[in-house]
Length: 230
Image (cartoon, rainbow, N blue to C red):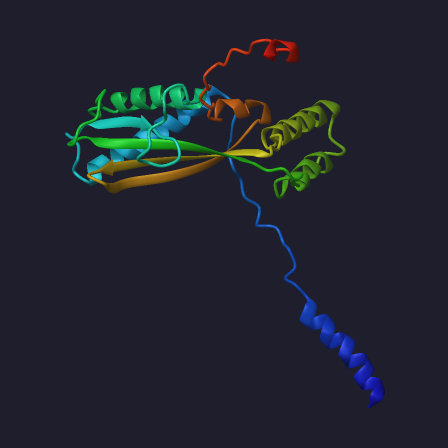
C-alpha cells in the first residue's frame, strides 16, 4: 500500500502540472509582396471587390473617394507622414477604380462613399521555422527514381523539371509582415471591409513604415564660460 502511494503521488503531481503541447498550424500559404507590381495586383483585386459591392448594394452612381488613414478609419494621415506604399497604392487603386468605370471623386462630400485603407507592419523578433510544401520531396524523388534506367537526355529533362518545380515552390522566409485593411464607409456605416496579410522582405520595411514628423530645428550656440557670468 505504501509503495502504491509513493508511486501514485508523483504521477498525480506530474499529470496535474502538465501544460498543453505546442503544435504548429496545418500547412498553409501566404503571399509575399516583393515589387510594385504586386501592389498593383492588390489594387486591381480590391477595385474588383469594391465594384462588386457597389453593384450588390445598388450604389453604381454614387461617387467614391479614396483616403489613406493612419491608426483608425476616421483619422487621415498628416502631411509628410504617408509611406511610399500609401502614396503608390492610392494612385494604383484610383486608376483601377476608374478603369472599372466607378465614379471616383477627387474630394469627399456627404454623399460620397469613402474608401479607407491603412497598413500595419508586424515585425517578429524570434526566429521562425519554415517547412517545405507537403509532397515536394516526394515529387522530386519520384521524378528521379521512376526513370533511373532512362537515357541521359531524358534524365536531364526530368531533373530540370524537378528543379523548376522546387524553385517555383520556394520563397525566402521573412520576419516582417504587413496587414492591409480596406473599408467602404457611407454615412458612418461599413458597406465593405477586407483585410489581407502578406510577407515582405525585411529590407523593404521602410516602404510601409510611417515616418515621424520632423520637429523644429533648434540652433545650438557655444557654451558660456563661468567667467562670462560674473
